[in-house]
Each structure stands twice: as structure tokens, then as C-alpha cells.
Length: 381
Image (tube, rainbow, N blue to C red; front, side, top):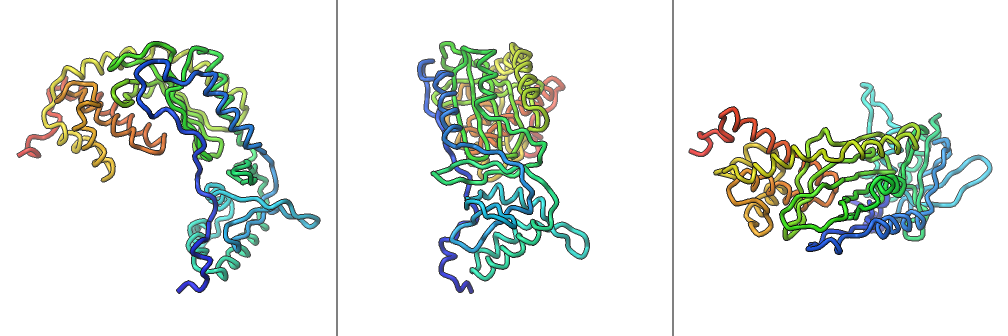
């Protein structure tokens, strides 16, 4: 049994934090969108408040103390001890990748998972974990990039990367978009301590149920993922639904190498994407006219879904006032998937589910053209 009452309030690293999340409300006219100037100013202000520092240091100089009420971080050498900082769970996981001990069989062991479990027991285990991490990091020869931000007034280590990592600020990416498309407006903006997501539309009057081009931008300065850009179709209904374009209209680069080179590649791709939704939108409009019986059974048969996704899909499929396409059509199935995707709190998980809508529609049309049934009749018996 735990013998330390402080374990009830123990914080094993700082959890991911959301700083900016706007754009989920219904918009009936273009004035409700966020202007590019206003949106990018919000992002720049966040970055200024963070006072971000990227510092390449030997991993052996890092010291993590698990014995307090929350995990603390300092840089230490033979002559000095730096100021104490916090550290996020995400950064702890990344450090653990550099100090993986091996079992007798040679298998690597995750320090993060085992430490989290033992630190919740009592302070004696936290002392042992502090010593263990200190010895493993002290024997490391790696020089790594430590990224830190001021969060809630306290300097916090948010990620630990290799020296070749090239952090790209959200404001830098948005500035490239603004250079090529000054008329853009924000439909959504989400920024957290580990990732960001921006959905941008051309400045034009929005009409209910009329798809318009949308650039779906995902970025991470913490090593969670690289820089992604997807051309999609934004559909305004009573809530914001989404349909995606096919994957050839996309851009992806890891944050390694020359930052300016990556940003210029990104800007060039924006130009290539223009007009790339025509074929997809023609298919989507046709899907609105193609009848589909047994919609729910077809979705269950065609998609791999978690229990939570099944529940969201079921609610979405019956929310006829929020579906753009006529009931019992292939378009209705596509809208069901994309509407359910909006329930995802993680922007990239939402994107992945939206992509399933495109795959579903494309494969369904292929089977229809080939004269195949969308679902085996024996499953309906």
C-alpha cells in the first residue's frame, strides 16, 4: 500500500495544454470568419508570451528530480546549477528514448512507462527513479536540443530533439501562406503545447451546403509530427462539416534540415494545390444523387471504428438537419463520417477520420461502377 499521502497530489510531468481554440461555432456569413491579420496576431502574441528558447546541451547536464510534488528539471555541471524549470510529459517521453536500458535478452525498456508507475507509489520510489535517470543520462554522450517555453509564468521544457531538428514556428508557416494568399481567413485555429491546426478559407461569401476550398494546416514544434498541409473542401451546414480531397493534394515535411528551404517548398506547394479540388467535388456532388440503402450497416461493414466513433457515427447519421446531402444517399454517408469527425478533440485524429470519408466514397464508386454490392446481402439477412 502507498505510504505517502503526497502521492494523491503528485504530478508526473505537465499535461498537454491548449492555448488557443476558436472557430467551432456556426458561421452563417463570411464576417464571422477570423481575418488573417487578427488570427496571425493571436499566434504571434502567444509565441512572444512563451519566450521560447532552443538550446543545444549535453544530455548528461540535464537533471530530473521526481521527489517533489511535481517533476522538476535543471541543468547541472561541476561548477553550477541552473534555474529550476518544469517539464512536460511529452518531453519526458522524448528523453526516455535516449536512455533506454536493455534487458538480459537485449530488449529495450521504456523508462517513461516504468517510472510513471513507480513514482505514483511513494517518495522512496521517486528517489530511486531520480537516481536511475541521473545515472543513465550522466552516461549519455548525446548533445540534444532542449526547447523551453514560459507557460503560466514558469519556464517549462516542452520537447527534446536531435541537433538536426529545425523547429518551425506557426507564425512562420502562416506568414508564407499570407504571402501567397493575402485574402485568406481563419475558419478554425487550435494551438496547444504539442501541436497546432489551422483551417483557412478564401475570403468569399459562404453559402449553406456549397463546398469551398480549404487549406488544413497541421504543425508541431515539439516533435509530435512534421509540417502537414491538406487541400480539403469546407462545407457550411448548421454546424461545420468537412469533406476531404484526395491525398495527392497534400504536403508533408519533417522538421529536419534547412528551415527556410522547407518553408519555400511549402509555399510552392500552395500554388500547385490551387484548383485541385475540382475532380473531387464533382465526385462528391454525384454522391449526393446516388441512392444508398442500409447506410448504417454499410458504414459498419466498410469502416474500422472504435466504440466511441461508432457512437458518434450513429448520432451523426440521424442528425438530418446537420447533414448537407439528401437522406439515404452515398453523400449522406460521406457527410455522416465528416460530421462525426468534428467530435474529435485531437485535430490530427479528426483529419484521419475525414480522410476515411474520401476513401469510403472513392471505393464505393469503384464498386458501383464494377457492379459490386456495397455490403454483402447475407449480412442483411
